[in-house]
Amino acid sequence: MKGDKKNKVVDFFVGTPAYNNDKDYAAFASFTAPLNMFFLICLVLHAIYMLVFSYFRIANMQLFDMICVILYAVFVIMLKYFKGSWLPCILLTCFELFLHQICSVTLFGLQSGFQYLMIPLIFMTALIGNKGKLMSYVRNIIIAVASVTFICLVVFFSDKRPLYNLPYAVNIGLLIVNVTISFIVTAIYTARIFSSVDSKRSQLDVSVEEKMTAIQNMQNQIIISFANIIEARDGSTGKHVKRTTEYVAALVNELKRHGDYSDILDEQYMTDTMRSAPLHDIGKITVPDAILQKPGRLTKEEFDAIKSHTVNGKKIIEESMADIEDEEFLKVAKCVALYHHECWDGSGYPYGIEGDQIPLCARIMTIADYFDALAAKRAYKAAVPTAVVFDNILEQRGKKFDPIVTDAFLRIRSQIDEIAKANAD
Image 1 (cartoon, rainbow, N blue to C red):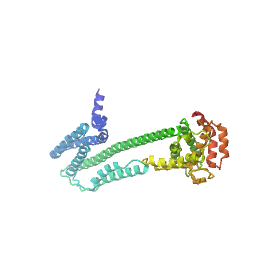
Image 2 (cartoon, rainbow, N blue to C red; image 1 turned 90 degrees about the vertical axis):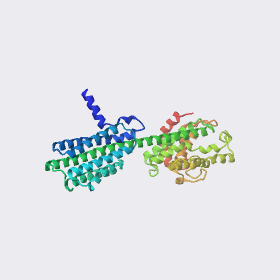
Image 3 (cartoon, helix red, strand yellow; image 1 turned 45 degrees about the vertical axis):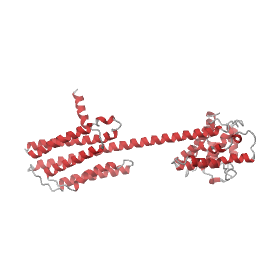
Image 4 (cartoon, rainbow, N blue to C red; image 1 turned 90 degrees about the horizontal axis):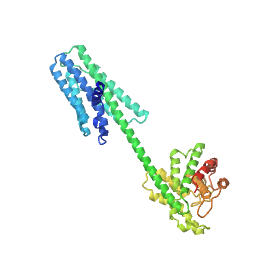
């Protein structure tokens, strides 16, 4: 029972204020908790001073410290239960420094000087972030230098002319206690402020990252849904988008694992290529259904209409996704839509470019799209056995397909087969 009461008393003075669970004041409370502790230590310190002055019968200082004790007790209670802005905290902190200054000048004869600038300097280091070893190192160095400077200037270089004739040992003892406690209080207070600030920064970083991830996932789902609707127009069940996206992901990872195109395939480019895969045929929305779903041979005009989906796809991405801030993703997405029917030997469309002139993301998309176009069943054609499709791809190595990309695709043949079977129409 006594232990519970003791814990309640300790928590009242040192713990986070009671309103911390109030979401409107949670952030405010996390910063007032260290200030609460700060005022509590000052209360204890001035209570000790009051006892010393009572012993030596110095009535003026005894009265002064009695007022300090009462004020600090009021500060602690106010911070515990007062809901408000930062203004009361700032005013109380300034008032505390003023009281401390009066005590120092009156008791020890310490004139205001450069040393007192060290305390706010230590507090200001809370503004320095904790990301990276360098910033943490800088912050710790500033605190250490400021603290040592403060103690040395106060104890060894100040002109001590106390107004009261205390015994030398008592005067020096109180001075050292005052300086040491000031240093400890400042260090603890600053540490708790750091903890609160760093915690809030971490929470904010996590919150922002989670929101960004949620937004990106939502964008991806919208893109995939949109792509599925478009693909459904030429007889696809919607699995084409899923399969080709997984083929691209598997191929990109194999290229990365094997060390191919290491100067291009960084994490960002890989992610953008995989995210862009569902958009490769987005331009088909501009092609009439009669042409897309025609079971027989296409005329030259009809084939030209089909080929236009590459250029139109690029335009649609430019116009419909202009507000997306991820420029690198948009760049890759436009390349995938525009160039995924270009061939390594220059026989493709729409521009007939060849080799490395074709962006890598498009060369990857080309082989994934080709495989699925043959291996998957459509309303106007039967599925070709995957073994035959792999043989065709090997024959087209260095012709239709990039040789390095072709080799990587054939190395993961079993994985491609598994994706095809798992997502069969």
